[in-house]
Image (cartoon, rainbow, N blue to C red):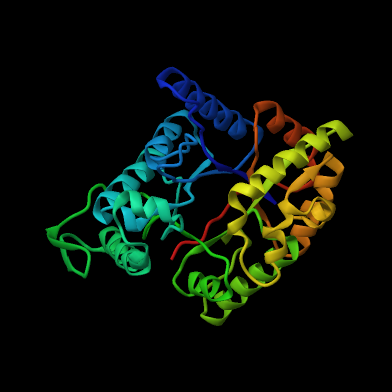
Length: 340
């Protein structure tokens, strides 16, 4: 089983505080690599007012210089908001600088106010995404100059430099939840990112759908092709547990709409039902022993690559995980990521 990080830096407000927030996160990732964590996936968001990462490729480029082994992922670059040729160039540069450690997660976006802020109609998201990823794939695989004429993009006699180190290109990751979107990810050569809200049974079902679709289309399946995001909150006493549950409710309040698929509706609304909170088995919230048991449930369902979104994350929490939880799992084998 492999363990990674999910999320990103949090600017605190004001230039000096923003710098502290980013540098604290950088030190956090450097320590995670030292402790044996295998990857970090950064989100991209805009116009939130919460200080979330807006330039994930830039931050990952800095992390490439501060680390040596940890894989550097985007979760995700929202393609409808970007020029795909510029994205292809920036991502390839990151792959080059990191010696082939980029995991390129992409998505079409879901927050209406971000589309509004960029003056991009949200109903165009799917078409824009499909065209952008076609351009990026071509940019990374065309043997020299190429032209492209689509509905949203047009390029004449261009060549994208540098070429990425990973060939034919860095692994592509797609966030998905519905059975059809998961099957599409398998058919179209993506690795799969699963959210932190869905309960364990639903996660296991999604992994099954992805694995079976890979097998159906003749694609070799590797469990490391699926990254499962989980909230991580380690507690050692009941007072810490009460505080962790309060934090978890706040997380659900902010991102509960990410829970999709059969049976997920009760988990979306769980924040409003205190007496049913224990039904929420998605987070790794508990003592080290409780977290190990929950991770083993995931592992029994085929999950081998877990990404932690840790509210109030600290280096101390990383060390606790590495010392008290990680030894219960085999993390020695190298992480192999399928490319298509």
